[in-house]
Image 1 (cartoon, rainbow, N blue to C red):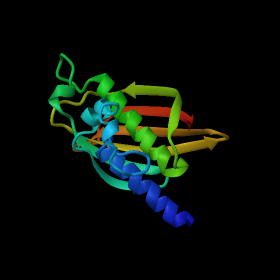
Image 2: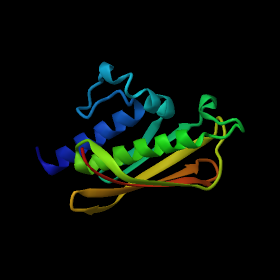
Image 3: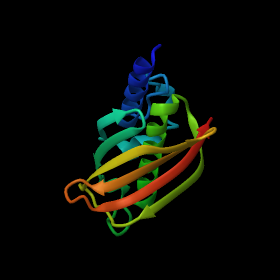
Image 4: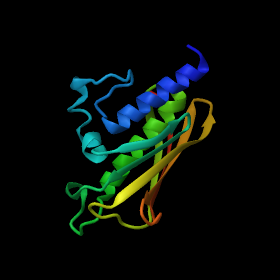
Length: 157
C-alpha cells in the first residue's frame, strides 16, 4: 500500500473511531469492545470530525448534561477522557497502531457547560525514537475561549 493510500486509511479509521469508539483499529465495528469503550462512548457521543489528516484531527461535540459536575460544569474527568481520545486518534493517523500513554498532562482554563459546543484540535507535536507527543486544545466553538490543553507522550502498545 502506498504512503498516500495508507494515510487515507489511517485518517479514515481515526475519524470513525472518534465518532464511535467501538470501532477497532481495523476500522470495523467491534461489538465486543462496547463494554470496554463505555466511557469513551459516553464522552464522545455526538462527536463530529471536521478534519482528519496525518498528524492533525479537529472534532467538535456538544457538552452533555450527564457529564457535568455538581456545579453544572463539564466534569474534569470527562474533559480528560475526551482529550485522551483525541490524542489517541491523532497519533494513530501517523503511527497506525495502538499506543499506550507514558506521560499525560492537562491544564484547565475555563469551564464549559451543558449544550456548549466545544471544538478539539489535536496534532502530533514531536516524534523521538519510539515516543510520539500529541497536544489537544479544547475551545468553546462560539467564542473561541480556551477550555483546556492536554499533552501526551505515547509509545506503541
